[in-house]
Length: 464
Image 1 (cartoon, rainbow, N blue to C red):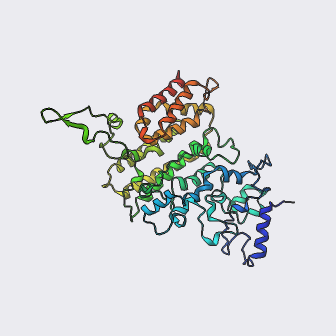
Image 2: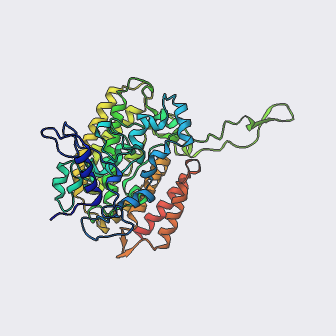
Image 3: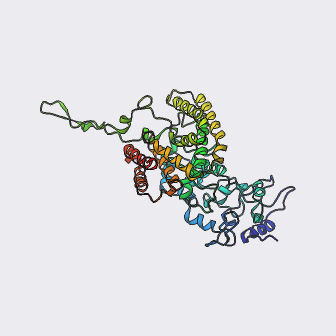
């Protein structure tokens, strides 16, 4: 005999006593049209369900029963709605000339809360809960009261989201952290005060931190690889969508470019650079400092911001190791997009959309290879070594690429081995990681030479 969790039983009682009679074909927890309801955090938070302060089981596919307090006290998702009430959000709303406060704006709520139509909200649903359980796990109306001990596949058919599938999980994450058809952090929003979107699945999962037990299928850097593929594919689809936008902000959408190609300190334009000498002529005070970008040179026209390479730069190394036959096609398609994007203000948006969608299809075709890849210490070591060997190109690609590279190194150092020994305790690796961490703390302080030096130190240790 199945046992219902206490909160689920309450929901059943409420629906049975207070709700109107069900229409023909309607099931409890759904609308008359059959759409499942979002039941709210309160429906999951009973001590006997997911609200315990200590783990009550060691089975049930990673269920700890401490998920609700974990979410409430440890995850930023629980505070996502509160962010909209802060002064910074109010300043952003003013800059954006929004007609309503952020906490009432669909533009903000689609990412900062469970923003679903009112007819889909169950009795315990609260918008103020922020990014809550059902944002990731799907509407619980149909399966809530009887999901214990049932087959996972059956629950998926009833509206539960497949978070066990890493690709599906990554897609759910990037729907906000990259964007989709209804969520869009563009240059206007960033200029108004919203942080730029940065995402890497493995690192962000660790920061979360997980409220589930990490399985073998997602460990060992597998989340990094899957996250890189899905984020790249969705970034390409986002680029294609943005070329079609007709209202303000108009194309080109500057959020698609490498931010710090424009937003960086320019040191050689101060009016105090010259001063008058004894002969009343302007005399130079000191030599012009050469910026690292000037020293690096430019692949195209100097001063043209490049398409942001952070989404694809590291993923290419995985493709080179796991699917080398696909690398030329992927490189050609990415190079084509880069070339088209360099014509800022004079490019053909429709042509870019075609190229971006084609590249997205290429990445999607690689996803099966990504999902099948076993993340063993030897493979992780090869990938780490190859990433570290690309130090000069990565460092010169800019801050966001360096940031992604650091997160990749953080992921694979604990997995890779040298002579059967872990790399985590090696002094050379620890020192390099500490310096790399400091080098990507602030964009204005980024030193590509320092970054490249530490990556070379890692590569040298792995190959000596």
